[in-house]
Length: 123
Image (cartoon, rainbow, N blue to C red; front, side, top):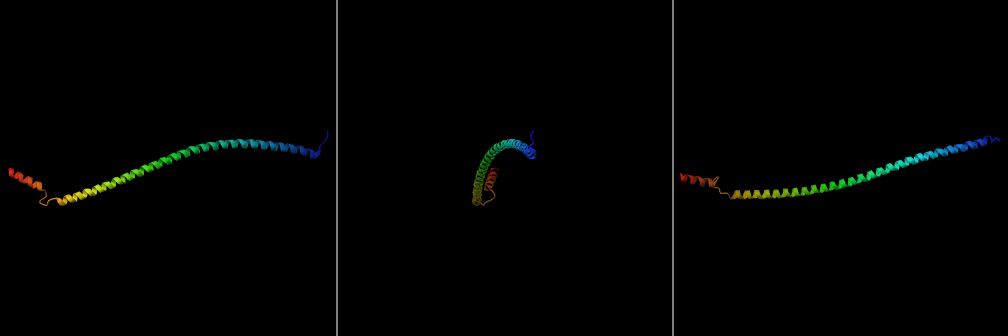
């Protein structure tokens, strides 16, 4: 049997060490690949959820805008109705003032005086 010596044994142990390192790196690569695949699946699920939520937010924002538009329309109609009522009230107050000005100043109620005279004549 031939002895290889110190240098030969270093080469042999070096080859074993290189094989162990390569095997360790291969295992680490496999582990990291599986972690990457799991992370990619999680990312895809998050993207799908994000798309659904964005769609819901868009629909909700459209609904809010339509409700705000309806509220503005109702506010405008109410404001117009209030203005018309105020004009009607002012017109009625003017008519009341006109009728008060036309009222005769004979007594509190001229019809009551006429009724009283007729009753006195019937006795």
